[in-house]
Every structure is written in C-alpha cells, then in structure tokens.
Amino acid sequence: MRNQHKLILSNDELLNSQLRDELISNLKKEGFLSRKIFFYKKGIKEEINIENQQDNLFSEKEIIDLRLQEKSILKDDLDFFLSLLGDDNSDRIVVISSLNKKIKTSAWFKKISKYLEIFEKQPVYSNQFKDWIKDEAKNMDLLLSEEGISLIASRNEENLLSAYQELKFLKCLDQKNTDYEFVKDSSEYHVFSLVNSCLSNQVSKSLEILEIMKLNKENEPGIIAVIHQQLDRLEQYKKDPNFFLKGVPRDYLSKLKIKAKKISPPQIKSLRKKIADLDKDFKTGKAEFWTELRKIIVNFGYI
Image 1 (cartoon, rainbow, N blue to C red):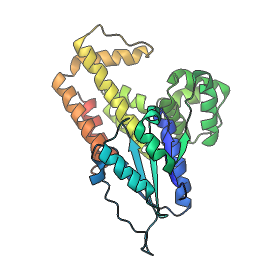
Image 2: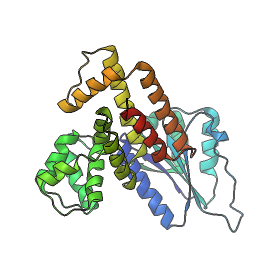
Image 3: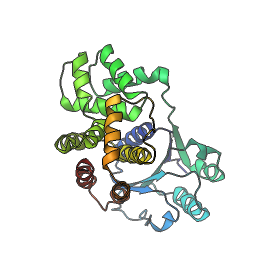
Image 4: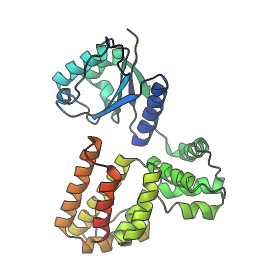
C-alpha cells in the first residue's frame, strides 16, 4: 500500500504549524480540498465519524488533520488509528502532528509508524536565531537591514512565535523603509503589545492591535497561550507582591504589578474560564475566535 499518510514532529508550535501548513497546501494542489481538524482526546473514536467513500464516484478527497497533545493514547483509540491508517482509501489522507517528540519511544508509535511518512523539524538554536529571522523575512519578501534583524532578535529573546508575529506585522504594514526606527515602531504591533495595552487599560489601542492581528491571521493558540501566561503572572503577584520575573522589560513589569493590585482573584478565575472556553469552542467550530477574543480583551482591559 502506498505510504500516503503524514506525521509531523516538532517541539516548537510555530515550526510544527508551518510544516503542517506546507503539507496541507501541497495536498490541496493534489485535489484534497476537504479538511477536518481534530484535537486528540481520549475516546476520539466517537468524534471522528468516518464514512468510507471509496466506492463513491463523486466522493470528495479529504484530509483528516489530527493533532496530538499527549504522549499516550487509549488502546481503543490506537485500534481505531490503525484501522484508519490501514484503510487503503486513496481519497483520504491523515496528517498527524505532535509537539512531543517523545512519542517516538512509545509502543503505539511503533505500530502506526509503518503507515506514515515522517517529517521531523529540528529546533532553532540560539546561534541560528538571526539566520532564521533573515530566512523568514526573505520568505515574506521583507527587506530588513542587519540592524533591523538584530533588533528583532534582541527583543524576542529566541521566541520564534513572537519574532514571526513581528515579521508578519511588518509585512502587513507594507512599507519599504528598512531602517532601525521603522522596525522599532512596527514592533509595537504584536501579541505582547496587545498584552501591554490591556495591562495599562488602553482598550481602544488593544482593539486596534487586535484588528491588525485578525487581518494578519495570527496564530490563535499562541495568542491564547500568552494570555494564559499573563493570568498566571497576575495570580502569582496577588499571592506574592515580591515575585520577580527575570528578562522582561521594566515597563511591562511595572504594568503587571499595577494590574495585579486592581484585579481580584474572582476576576482572574472568570477570565481563565472565558479563555479556556474560547480555546475549546473555536477548535470545535462553536465560536468565531476573533469576535469572542474581542469581548475578553474589553473585559480584561477595563479592570
């Protein structure tokens, strides 16, 4: 049987999603236009309702985009995966992606790997960070000076997602000026600037940044992760006013401390629930991400 299914392995969320998008794009060129996205949870067999359309002349070629968030899976789910991958259906391709490379040592991985073409993305190390930024900028047709690349690298501290978002906002602004000041000004428009605006109660500015992020199709799980991080930090400051964060800008630290004094534990709990509900609902198609995020940002900003 043709080894048509794919497995993507990378410990970095951005590298994982980039490789997945590339594979999906190539499959669409081959006629696989239907795509169903599933996030693995125990008992997923009931959620993925697969109909075998192999004998249907009018069947649509489809991609099952399955994302693993755990190292282990249930035996019943393994049996289902083996059945799904072993089914010789040329109109269906399964693309599995995982952020946990340790799955390669699991017994279940060895059983399904014979059905998969494996794509493993190596991490970007600190001495490769500037070259990675330069390559990503080139892919976006952005002409940046060495000074601009160094500035982006220094501001994002080897955080690929943050640096990538900054490059995308530069592209969104669509300017040809590549000097130091242009990069400095443009770097205000990324997810961390959104957080800064929320912390300082600049709701109007927060919503402006949010619109740019929406137009630029920013990574939704990455945004959720950063907001979760801010709630964690606010909670830590509530418990310990002497809590100290290393390697963060002083102005951000100051805003975080002021917000921690204003926000109450019930308000933090409420925001946690809202962002968790958004994470769940947009992944299952029950909510429009940017509409619901806007409500959360307004709520967060006015505290």
